[in-house]
Image (cartoon, rainbow, N blue to C red; front, side, top):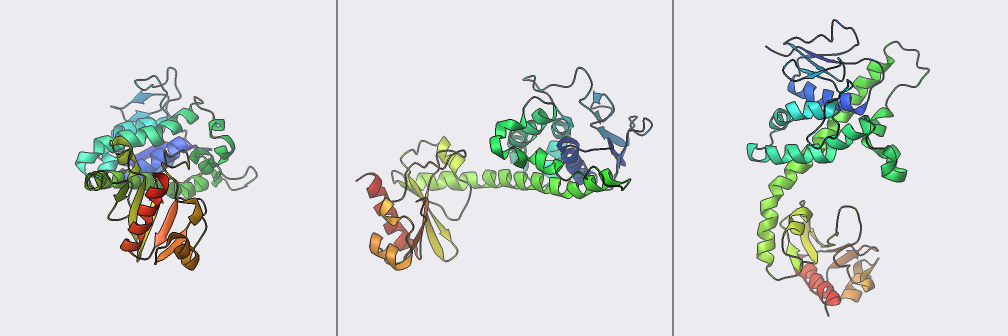
Length: 306
């Protein structure tokens, strides 16, 4: 039977049912989304998906709550929120709807679950404190979405629902952006692998365009590669390679003598005509041609390994 109703709880909203709603409204765009605690409306039927309310988890009956005891657990016994349950059962269909190639769906489904869904599940269940983010805790996605709740003295009787539906497209945009990024990495993988093979023993990895490359590079045996060269519009960039996504430390920095220089000053410091800019933090330099940037790359490598 066609799904005609999506049902979640009324009142204040949280990231888990908001993000679940973003998934489900994409898959069932003609279904009516209702926020309620009316027992008649949260009674399962073949034309409904009920989530984050109802006191039961039964995929066959299309009800996905996690507040009951015992609550649903992953294989590693970490708790699900409604978002995790909806992603488990509908995530693959959502990826198909976003035109993710069939060959990449399994891997992207797992990666999105680990990187995006699980933290929401843990925070919603109190299994992880926002404080793990330190001073950035107020900028976590659950906190940002929660900031869109109405103020306490909003007199409108529809304030909660209005805020929920205002927040829904924003929640959807975060999901879509993350999925696009994961799909992009999957598409880039073969291109990066080819570029690494082409580099051979060189310390320079030349890529045909800007693309996600670090995860592939880190899994390769190419520890000798220190910098990347990438075309950017009419210019070319020479880039350091971060050791991880959690640090600004690099495999190697660009020469200290270049830091913060541009145009004629940088040409003088490098001896390379066409050198245009080097960031003060020495993670990127720019030149106006491939020949110029490759000259700079050779100098940078020699500065690391004289």
